[in-house]
Amino acid sequence: MRDVLFLFWCLLPLTTFSQQGTIAYIHWEGCQRNDTTYLQRFIANTPGDTFSLERVATDLQRLRNLYSVANARFRLVTLESDRLGLVFEIEEAWTLFPIVSVTGVRSNTWYEIGASEINLLGRGMNLTLAYRNIDGRSNYQVFFQQPYVLGSRWGLLAGIHRYASTEPLFFPEGTVFYDYTNWSFDVGTSYEFTQGHSLQFGATYFIEGYAKTPDQPLENPPGPDELTIPKGLFKLIHRLDRVNYDYFYQDGFSNTTFVETVYNSDDGSWFNLMLNDFHFFRRTGQRGNLAMRLRLGLSTNLNSPFAPFVLDSRFNIRGAGNRIDRGTGTLVFNAEYRHTLFERDLVAVQGVAFSDLGAWRSAGGDFDELFDPELLRHFVGPGIRFIYKKAHNAVLRIDYGFDLYQPGERGVVFGFGQYF
Image (cartoon, rainbow, N blue to C red; front, side, top):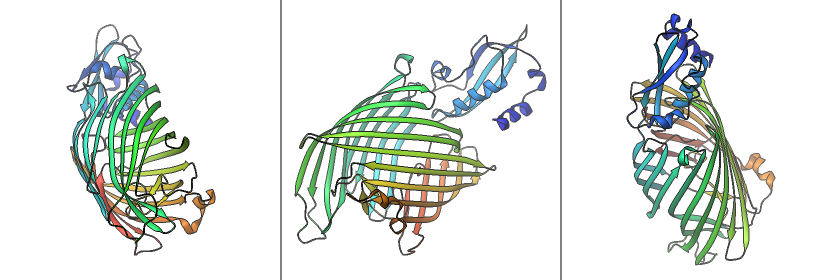
C-alpha cells in the first residue's frame, strides 16, 4: 500500500492534495461492458465524503481485483468551494472467452471447445457452455451463476454436467480400466461477507456409472463388469481471497475449504471429504512473482479402488503421468517462481521454475503415509507462460517436469490457465 500511495503522490499535482475537499460526484470513464451501478458496490467512496487518498487507493485495488477490470486509475476535477469530482478511469478486461484448449500429459490428451461469459450484462454473472473430449469420450457442461441477486449479498448458481473418462482403478491383482460416466445436476446459494470472503452451500444429484473397457492389462480383471450408483451430495465451500492483482502479477494469499458429504442410495452409506487449498503470492522486484500452493485432502478411509484423490500431472505433480495412483488422503506442496521475460501493452512472456512435492494415503492406509519420505513424489522443472494481459488468467503454459530422485520419470504438461 505504501508503494501505491507513493506512486499517486508522484503522479498527481501536490496542490490537489493540499485541499481538504469534499467529493461532489463520482464519475466513471471507459465502461462499455461494465454496469457502473455494479462497479459502485465495490468502492467505499460516496458523494459527500471528504477526499482520502488512502481510501481511493483501496478502491482502485478492489476494482483491479475484479475479473472484468484489467486496470483502474483515478483523477480529480477541482470545483468551487473546495469540492472535487472523483473520476475512475476503467481499463476493461475481456470477459467473453471462446473456449478452445488442448491439455496433454503422457498418454492423456484432451480438448475443450465452448464459450464462457464471466461478466454477463456487465454485472459479474457467469454463463458457461462447453464440450470436452477426455480419453475420446464426450463431456458437457452448462453452468450459470448470479453472485448478487437483486443487488444483495446473496447469490444463486445452477449447472448440468456430464463427465466421462477412462479411469484406472487399482486392485491388489493389478490395474483395471473402467469407462467412468457421471451425470450431475447442481444447485446452490452463496453469501458474500466482504469482497473476496464468501460462503457457498450446494446440493448435487448425480449418477455414477462404471463399465470395464474391452482392452485390459490383466487376463481376468477383478471388480464388477458394470456398476451404476445414484448419489446425493451436499457441500459447503468457504473462500477467503486476499490476492491483489496488477494485470497478471499477484500478491497476497487465499484459502479455500471444501467440505462435502455424499449419500449412496444403493447401500445407504455416507462418504465424507474435505479439501483445503492455501495459496500464497509475493511480488519480487519489478518482474518476479513467487507462487505457492499447499493442498490437504482427506476422505472416509475406505479400502476401495474408487479412492477420490488422484496423482496426476494435470492436477498436482507435473511430469508424474496420467492418473498413476489414487488414495483417500493427499498432501501436496507446489511452488514456482515466475519471471517476466517480455512485456508489452497486450502480451507478456514468463519463464518459470517449479517444484511439485506430494504424498498420498492409500485406500484403507494409515495417516502417517502422508509424511513417509519413501512415499513422496518430487518433480521439478522449467516452464514458460504466454500471457494475454487484457483477460483474467488468459495464460498458455508449457511445463517439463522430471523426478528429482528418478530422472527417468519425466513428462511435458501443457494447458490453458495458470497451474494453480
